[in-house]
Image 1: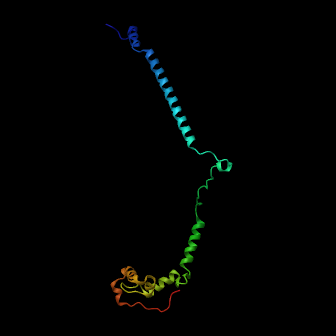
Image 2: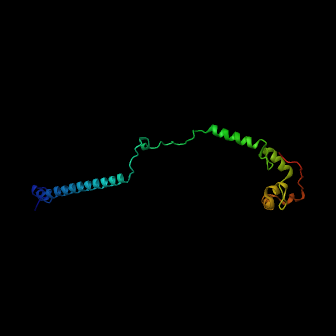
Image 3: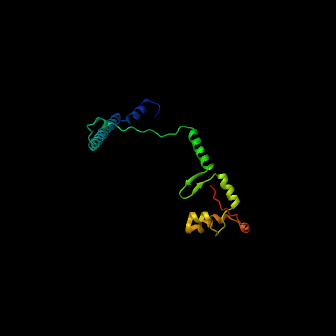
Length: 170
């Protein structure tokens, strides 16, 4: 009977490992790695020379060879309170003042409060009716404009006549 704990069994186990083959494998791996690095360097240099040959020759004027200056980001400072205040002031001025939009054509801007009062007095045009403003703005297509604006009118409003006003709201 052979005892596995004796020195003779470890000698057989060590005999199975070939240190020569391990060292030979490491040498082959090192040579293969070196060849790969050389091939990669050769390819990189080839790409660099091809890129350099495609570049135009530098200008004889030194200022022309400088890269252009970047304008930088066009950022708005946070919070944009001044811009918002300016926008609100412009909107308020447009909504709350009288002004000519096109004086030659007789088109004026009126305050929104006054426009709502006029609409409450006159009402919306009924479907099929052409008022003076629609006729002036849309010409021969005025019927189409009254169809769109009169679409929201209810049938209970048909008995009420809108008061006619001879003056213009300016």
